[in-house]
Length: 238
Image (cartoon, rainbow, N blue to C red):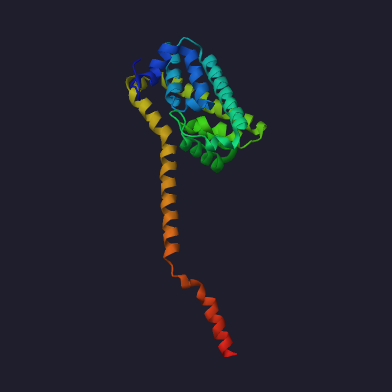
C-alpha cells in the first residue's frame, strides 16, 4: 500500500510501519503521548494506517494484540509526561525556546487544560501537539494522581484503540484502499480543526480586548464628575 507523504517521507505512516514495524509504532505512540520531543510525530494517521495494514495482512499481528500494546504505550507515555511535569514544576513555563521546544506549545496545552479540566486528558488525545503537552501540564499542576490515572487510561483506549479499530474496519472497504491518500489527508485535517478553532478564537478575543481597552482610553476624563455635580446641586438646594 502506497500512501501520500503528508510532510517529510520519514513521517509517512506507511514508510514508518514498513521500516520499523510494530516496535517503531509503539515507540512513536509512547513519545507522542508525553515526551517533549514527540509533538511533531504522526499520531492519528499512523494508528489508522496500522489498523488498515493489520486487516490486509501486511502487518502480521492479531488486532487485539496491536490494540493492547498501543493502549499500554499511550498510557505509559502519559505517565512519563505527568511525572516529568511534577518534577520540573512551574519552571517549565520559563524554559527558553529551542529547535524542539516552543513555549507557545506549552501555553496552548495549559490553556486547554485550564478550560477543560481533567477531561482534557481524554480530549487532548485527539488534538496534535496538545496531546503531547497536556499530561506534562497535569503534572505541573499537581493534578490528583488517581484522577490522572483514570482519565489517562480512558483517553488511551478511546484514542489508541478507537482509531486503530476504525482503520481496521474501514480497511475492509475497497473505496478506502482506492482513496487512502484522501482518507489520510482528511484525518489530518480533522485532527487540526480544534487547533485552528482555538487560534481563531484567541485572535477574536484579543481583538475584542484591544477594542475594549481602546474604548476605555478614549472616554473623557470627566466621566466621574457626575456624582460631584449632583452633590453640588443638593448643596445648592440646601
